[in-house]
Image (cartoon, rainbow, N blue to C red; front, side):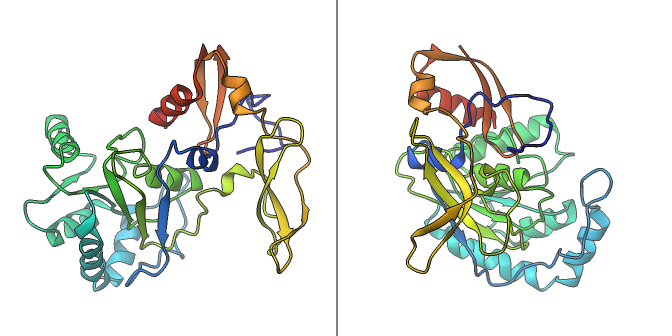
Length: 287
């Protein structure tokens, strides 16, 4: 996340926001569904010192909402009728096993931390080959997993950070032939904005929203906190410095020497020769 506070890395040489990748058709748009049939209330839980939620506490919330899971999965299956690949992110192992038992027989598989590597590789291979439609997992396929045909993400777990939330949703944003969108169903009350981390600074007040402001010098589309009037005209914005030079200018005849993936999935890079498309796809594959 961008900040004026001291950080380990001194300068951000280039930033590749999710919104830019969407605007340039490097990613599939996400369609968020705000009104699921039921949801779990994880709001009273706090992550442990490790940064993760305690599995026993998660199981307790799910047990208190045990009538919710069958109805949630019934809705997921209904939405999945016109979809090719569905990834379901469960809160705990017990939760994942319950979800798996409610999915259509022969069309689903489950991957957890204890799944033996040969079995896991076989399941993932069959899912990528679209021999199974539903893939349930617990904290093992949130990053580095690439199955471009995934077009429905069901989140049945709380996420400890916005970066993790982005990584989960990102499993469905890969480009694939005839894929127009990825449906995202959130049943855990995660209130993160998929694009908010691009702003970096805390939201100044409740009336502020994300405003896109082109840089007059280089044309880069910056996302700042700002305010609009009732007609949608800009009243003010709080950005004072451009976040990057024009991507087309920077990446013309340059290559990637190294990539540091920041927590907000924007990319800080050390550049040396490649095209913008090659850079963008390489960056996303590393996320």
